[in-house]
Image 1: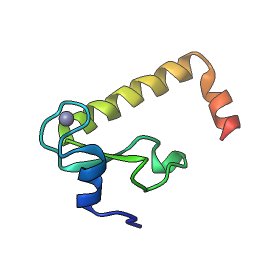
Image 2 (image 1 turned 60 degrees about the horizontal axis):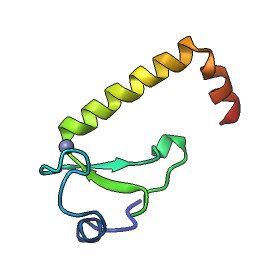
Image 3 (image 1 turned 90 degrees about the vertical axis):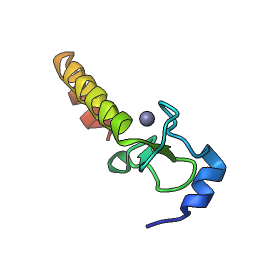
Image 4 (image 1 turned 135 degrees about the horizontal axis):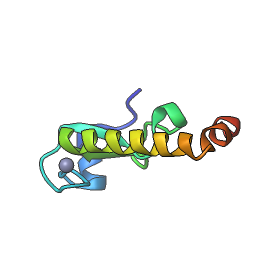
Length: 79
Ligand SMILES: [Zn+2]
């Protein structure tokens, strides 16, 4: 469900990838939709495919670190 258009996103966040400042072609959710984040201007920002890929890898590493530290059970219980 889109609650804003591309022009509104650019007006709120600028016409650049929020991470590297280059051209963007994707939408990043600060709080992932799967984790309860909303699809609105406050939670969305422009990102490029390269940075989005880096971000995914970073969250993979974090998930693995959490699992090794035994935090995955706490996280699951909190959600
Ligand atoms: Zn980027």
